[in-house]
Length: 314
Image 1 (tube, rainbow, N blue to C red):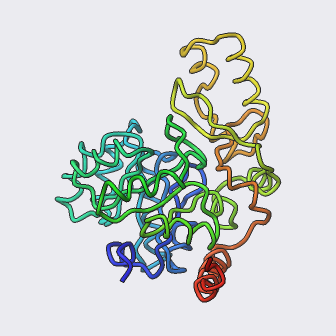
Image 2: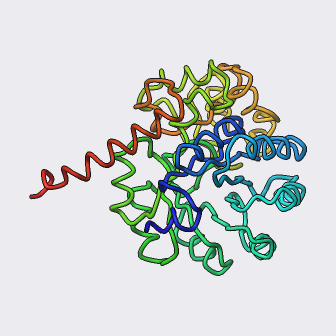
């Protein structure tokens, strides 16, 4: 039995990324109901909002689901308290040291996965005793690794260094990329951008339309002096480039970013002044679909490719 399916109690080793402003209870429950693992993205939620989403997700599915928590989030301990109180059994952590909270989560019967962008942090995850590692290449949207290691390089590198379950993330949206990741050594995949452009995603319709209109080269990893983030090139992105051209300091970049940029763009639909976080794979996403169709397309195509593997013989 696939190790990811076994550890999370799911049918297919497909994890929906816990994206800010996209991954609410509707998206998470829909993915879980269709055999994957849905994640609520708590990074854009106040504690009371997270509690509401968890409770609604419980009503919408009887399948396993989890919560993604960026460990640098100021309300992280309030979030953890709610997760424990609400008896959520799966937590994905990112953007911080997993060692700080993994023991607490384990003591409460919670399975812990942690997101990394290089082998060094994967080895730190082993020291922290996490259950699963998510290795995310810099093709991924949103906050990312500063080293710019692609998923194709990252997965075999980390697979050779660890023996616990490994999930590949970054640049995965279909059966072909899923199978490629599995062949490279992953036990499962995490998909973000494809689910961001679903009907169940809580992102603004204007942002979803921008995703399906994207072409190659329309995103870039920037703001490395703060926290590296892959975003779409828009008016706000152009202001960042102007700031770099004028040798802006870290403080000036931080002031330019301000607060609520991602909410403004992804949730409120301000395509000019908002921060539009999405992955490179958006260039091949050309429609908005229901989660059920996204999942069935991936699974059906995956099985078809497996049945035709002999055609790839040299």
